[in-house]
Image 1 (cartoon, one colour):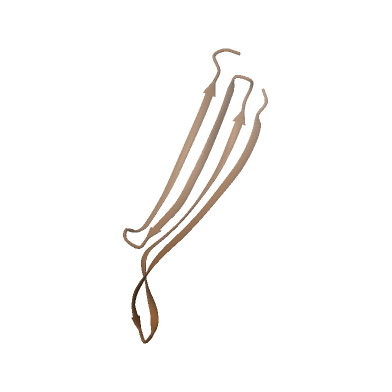
Image 2: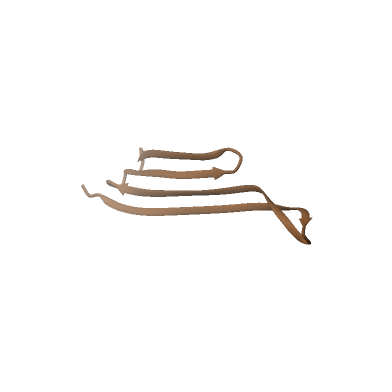
Amino acid sequence: FSVLFDMSKSTTYLRSVKKVQSDEEDGKSKFAEQTKNSSWKIRPSATYKFNTRVTGSMFFETGENKTKTTGTYTYSEFGISVNIAIRD
């Protein structure tokens, strides 16, 4: 019996802002912020190989989304996967 272990991590960050030009004031153009979005997430994961027939993996993901219209939304997810081969 032996256990092989592999670990990885992924991180994502996104940001977007949209501005539209409005009326000029004192000869200068004004810009109004129409939309503003930002989000981030991190997902570490681990993969195990117990033997030639049994493998498994697990992950945990957490992140946050912010928008000007809907506010802030945070989430956390967890998952486990086990694969058992019936044939070699």
